[in-house]
Amino acid sequence: MIGRRAAGAVAAGAITVVAVIGWAIPNMAGPTMLDVQLVALPISGASGSTDRTIVLGGAAATGASNLQLAVRVTNRYPLPVTIGGTPTPLRVELRSRNADGTSTLIWAIEGSSATFEEGDDSPDGPTTSRAYLVPPGITDLAIGPAEGVRLLDGAGSPLKAGRYDLRATAFGVGSGLLPMVILD
Image (cartoon, rainbow, N blue to C red; front, side, top):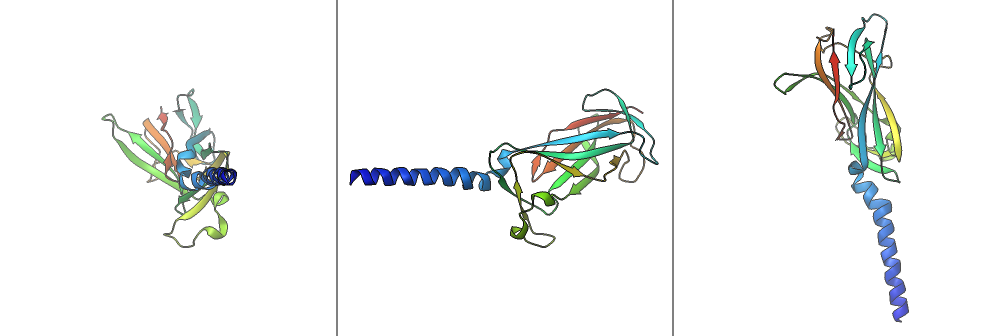
């Protein structure tokens, strides 16, 4: 009789561990398992654009007229995690960095992540949230036009020489700042 109780307790414990590892963590703690990074690639000589000299993230100065953007999402958990988000869960912002330490929003680009959508589990409608299933490992999600975002402000004028910060957000998880300096 004691052997049956012990076996039952071990089985119940094993089921609990499997439920926590296989369901609870991936479904309830999903955002804590994600790292988000902005990937920006300078594009030179885009049609109709003048190259500017920029320093992106501490790299060497280079000529660029556009920035091709992607949001890199890394799921560190060994199983897919479920994340809640809006229908446009990706966002990249460009902010000017002021001398007093404040920043001013220049523009923001929002994007969807249809590759992660749960399909039939995602409710329809413009104001509802969606469920996203993020696989383990690294996934790059392109955001913005395929030819890249031009180095312009929100009014369509060329960005002034100065310091700027780029930052991405995916599913409510923010990346670090990616500094950009426009030299001319």
